[in-house]
Length: 638
Image 1: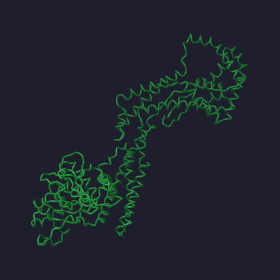
Image 2: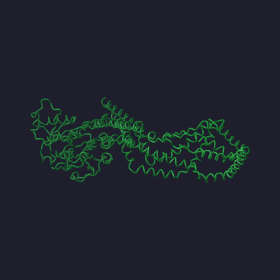
Image 3: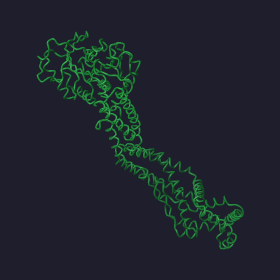
Image 4: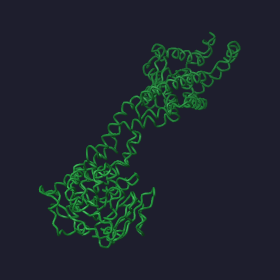
């Protein structure tokens, strides 16, 4: 047997591990909310953890004894004998006691927070016995000090465990979980009821100490029958009584607190019969017997029984974790289908206008030119604008004012947005039709009648506010800066070419103008750019991955760029890709914010619950607690 200091240390370690498990379970339950797990409240193992182990592990030990049993069998009479006063009102009517009444040893209420001891009850100091008979939806407990009790013993009277009012069952179960010793009051009529047996099966699983009192017996007639009744009760509940008493049906003695309790052996000897009872048998003092129980052994036994119950692989915390893990795995397939990668596939996104890129690149270069190159380019740009103005006016008169390239792009992009929305809702409808119980209601909420039109209107409003020119400018500026950083030698080479082009312009502009093509800066660059534009294939964009690829004709770019064509081509591809990615990201973010919300991320997190920090923490704490409980068993049995 372990020494007292060793045992206290062991229980302190168990208390700390249990606290970690309890705290971790709260966090895990929040983390697993999407999986719609069974609420912790109401599960037997959790209530045992909350109502028994959390209040009673660690700190000063005490023992809780509860008088329990069915309707109208004299529980309160037995309780009053233990209290040696009318502490709980007894009623000849069924379902008399509605709320627990607790006897406390002197000073217990000063040393302990009673709300922690009985967390599910609203506590009242006892003033009169009839208070426990009052109807109330609130769980109430009435307590009073009983100086005759040992300093570590609490005794409770309990609501009927087979009452028509199910709220009484809830209260009785809360008392049963907190108890170490159950004084089971049975009668000939109330030892084999289904509700009674179910209550005591749970007590048996928790290894409670049980003192059986067969009340309202007809003695000596029932001497030959009670062993059969008790054997049936024990077989049906897996209870092994620690002591057995018989109390006669004597109303006057009960009212005067003079009811005798006769102890009987259990199991009975093989040759037991009514004649085995001594004629001069002496009744036992039930209160004294209760006070003389081996508190230490009972406390170890019942705490260990409760710990085993919460750690049971079939009905305890491991089973709860297994259930969460299975639900998480079930959701994994839905996560794959409903993740952003699977839902938002945007194809045929329009290519940005190439000539707009070229113009913006030229503007960027011009803003950074200095000295002679800047003066030459400014002069010829001004000259080109003046010379070509009559030609533009004539063209506009015949063909009409040309639509700016970025306006054309805006129209094409809006068309792609509408197509994307239609495909998205079709895919979501399929998800709702084939999704599991966790995903289906969330998607159906998204697919209500107004969602599609509301989303389109929201997207239209936001799309109209987009400054495409600013988007283009920002893209070019960032990519040119990136180009200068990542490829400084190539960037320097192209900058020199740009300056060379400024030097060439005076020699070529007259000739070209004579041929009717306008100044070089107005004609040559757009020709090259438009050649490349005509060779551009539509961008295929994967929204979630953020990848984009724009493939231009090698011949056109190579012919335009000359030396270093491969590098220039790759950089131009990247310029297209970055712009397209920005625009697609804009749409993706809006759809997520306005329609999907955090749904894809929630599903993904729930599908990965098994590897989450919260799940692993509870698993680890449970494993540690199991090891401590095993060591406690080995130490006590040594």
